[in-house]
Image (spheres, rainbow over the protein chains, first blue to last red):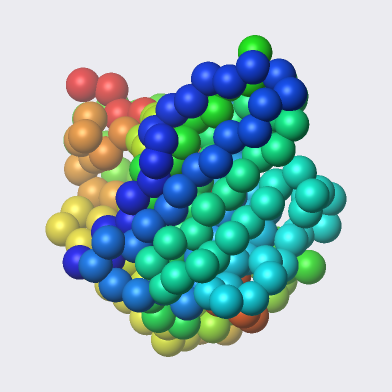
Length: 114
Length: 110
C-alpha cells in the first residue's frame, strides 16, 4: 500500500510554455500533498503544501503565480509551471501524507526547459 | 526554522564494512523518518521512529531516535553494494511538513 504516482516522469519544453505535472495517491486518500524540488546531489526543498479543497501554502521564496498548485480531489494534486524558463529545469517530486507522521513519495518528474 | 544536520555528506566504503549516519537538530520533532533515494527516483521510506530512545531494526539497518527526540542515527552492518544510495533523514513538525537533512551519499564498493 501507499503508492504515489507522478506523470509525466520526464518532460522537455520550450522556454515560455507551461507544463503540468500530476501527482496521484493510488491506494489511499491524501488530504495533504507536498511538492518538492531537488537539484542534483542535493536534498529535497519543500515548495508548497497542498490541502484538498483549499489554497496551497507556499514556502518563502517560491512564486505562487509561477508554480500553480491545484488539489481538486483526495487523490490528485497538480503542479503547473507557468512560463517556464531554463532555470526552472529541475527534478520535481510530490508526496502524499497518509498519517500525521509519514509521507510517501512519487517517482519524480524531470523537467528540462530549453 | 527547524534545521536538520546530517553527517557525513559523502561516504565511500568497501563491501562488508559497517557505517553510521547521523542526523542532528536543536529542535524537537514529533517523529523522524529515514528515506533512501536512488538517482532519478523518489525517496523510499525506510522507517519512522516516534518515541524518544526508540530503536528499530530493518535487516542489517538499525535506526535509533534520541531520548530527547532531537537526533537520530542509522547504522548499517556489513554494507553491500545494493545499499548504495542517498540516505535522507526527515523530521516531522507542524502541518505534517517534513524538514529534510542535507543527505548522505553512500557508495559501497564491491
